[in-house]
Length: 533
Ligand code: ZN
Image 1 (cartoon, rainbow, N blue to C red):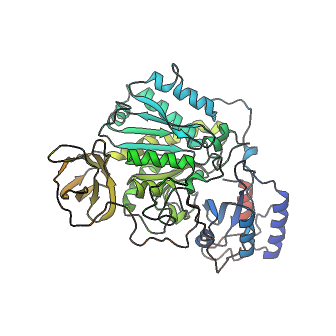
Image 2: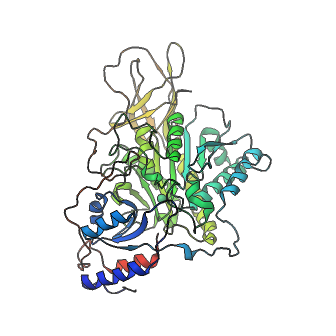
Image 3: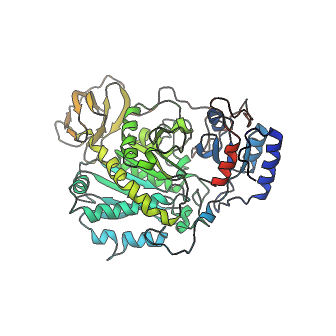
């Protein structure tokens, strides 16, 4: 089945070989979904834009090699459109199940729960002054979605920016779970000895969810885990976005997967300022937007904070997975467009900055590699959270009563609102260093406008008192793109909007691999041998 050095093979021969491969390879059965992981080969990287418009669930793209999750009907559609694909082979044989492991292992859900919540030996019990553990709610199968909160007065809401990490929306991508648990231990263990860690914990509210999809994770067992939740939903394709929702449904949890609804509830209540989620299958920091080819209003900010992560992780900084990345970062839709991702919703729905960090090209690396992955990501994980302090921070209150306000803040020239936490009135607007004009608004109040200067790593503090009155601007404080690209997008938003847009030019694999920007058919064998990344 080796196709190496066969870039010039005629199309028909390749097709014949593909058919043999298709029927002889064992596919990677997903316990929660009838969708099969397949490897699709494009004739040139740009062809991904047409593939996206078919509405299938794409999970990874590197150059001309695409991993997608498709049911039998979608497989027929792809064939009819002329796409060539094979089953993506399972990474399972890579893991030495039961082998003697030193260092990190993929923990079971019970082990995670015990380490976090055991009444005497759990982390919350051992570090009660700076850590509490609470459940955000239950997964489909009734497993708690654990939040670990780390701050100087955990459980007491203070006017401090909320930062967050969420891992393993895809249950078959377990590395971030291990790294988040290690980060929790590291922050707690070093609070009293590391001034930088102490400053971070004292000045922010850190929320870490090591495992958002415990059902799909299946105790870290690669023989039984699933990308999906127990209802077969892809959690990182099930958040609202402007391509599948209206302004009115954008913050409604109705019809969403349980795990997605719990994260939405949390974010709407907590108004997180910044954070990230962890995946595997590539080695890159991916920033908004995912749902549209348009750059976000904060594109330069996202680029800066993504670089903060990649610059601390040399393998990631130098990664060419995906090939569209530069210095380890990529704008999501420049890689491949998706609908219903977490990062776009956090940014638009609650105003927070959120990126998607792909930790390993291999979805489930051998446990012997986890120590190295932790070493490579430790400083990056900390440095990224510290970017929250390159910002203007303060509280917005009613001038006459002193009460905290549910208000929003804009920066002149950047079409994006961020919100106060209405319980304390605190806000935090991250910006790249420079001079800006800030506008604060609340319903029934006169707007405030003032000049600010943002300095690298040091917050600018600005408390604002608003006077009741008229605001003639008509600004309703909702982030909604002026020209929403609401039709013909790929489906997958929780409202069941299915794409299925027509594709006029199916772009089958051609032998024109030597054309500029084209792809060699030998990429196919590379993709197959590499397994399902
Ligand atoms: Zn993922």
